[in-house]
Length: 206
Image 1 (spheres, rainbow, N blue to C red):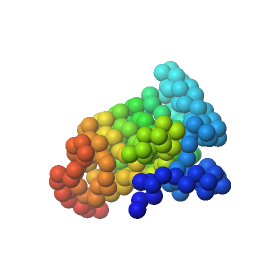
Image 2: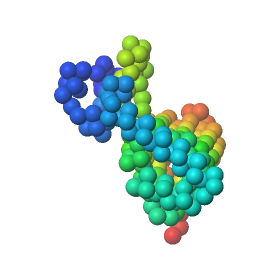
Image 3: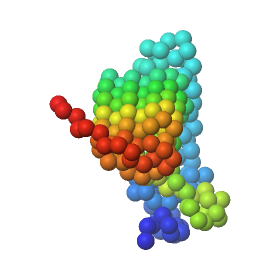
């Protein structure tokens, strides 16, 4: 059985470091984890400051953004404002990728975006999840994170949402407004809510 369909083993999890729990996709209670709360609050403050700087000085804001995001390739272009990037250490973006305004990334799971991608405005990448059938666990704030991986040469239209644990292959086009709930194979076009493959794409000829 999928461990996320089961109730968390609280005694066992209490013996485990919270960052290890996050990395392993285990259950944790964000509201009881001051270390995680501190990271999220500090990140929100930094993003707000960078957005404010960008109003007058885009180059300075970009320099500060690169300091904030240690795993950003040198030639990545991200437009301001940015909505949120809660865990900057968990975001990796490959060379020559362009990300339009109002990017939102929640929460502590690893997010990898490949090379030569175009990410449209208002896109949202969500790594956290809650228990689907136990409201008491949701009420108590239990959650877990699963990574999101986006391959090379992908193009997302505006307002695409990607949910926890999704892997998107290389050379994938996601239609505007789509909600990606499951893996999308390479060299395809997908769209809809939930997103479904609607077309095969030719492989890239180098």
